[in-house]
Length: 183
Image 1: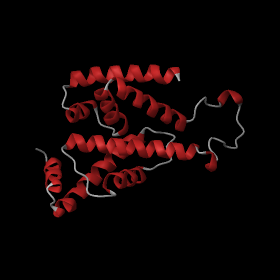
Image 2 (image 1 turned 120 degrees about the vertical axis):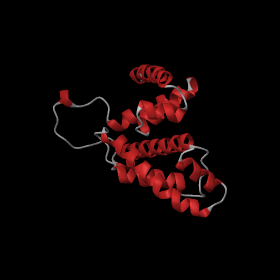
Image 3 (image 1 turned 30 degrees about the horizontal axis):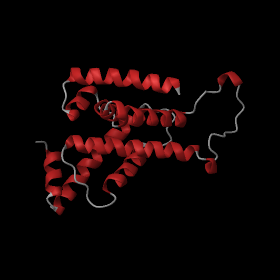
Image 4 (image 1 turned 180 degrees about the horizontal axis):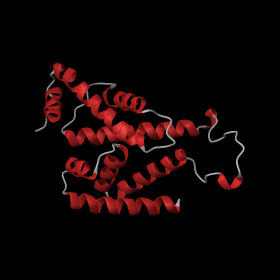
């Protein structure tokens, strides 16, 4: 059992000192996940620290959470980051905040067909539809896309072989592509 899982068990048993030991380790991992996720998100206005803080508040804002394992933690962390990114995209698109309206002089041929926020919302909706088809593939997408894990790390977290993870990833990518392309 790794140290994080042991800390989760101590926390679940009511050991308040475990929270003091757990928080710095969880925060560092969340910061790393946020940095890797936002590194390739060119249009994001969030910085990794803001994403970590928002996800951290969602995970630890109320009563101390009970995580059964490292896998459970990564699933919860990736879900929290996903909700933060989706909520952020919705807020930026909201009418009361100006929505998609920007004042700019552009050549009509250079105007993108969708904004990054719209694309993120399309991906979120497609992921929800994928969950109904294959929940394990959805969890792999969450770990890879939102948590920024490598294929080997995601396979270990899911408890599947790398070949199985590769097959799930290929299925999920093609399924999501066809869903997003048709929308």
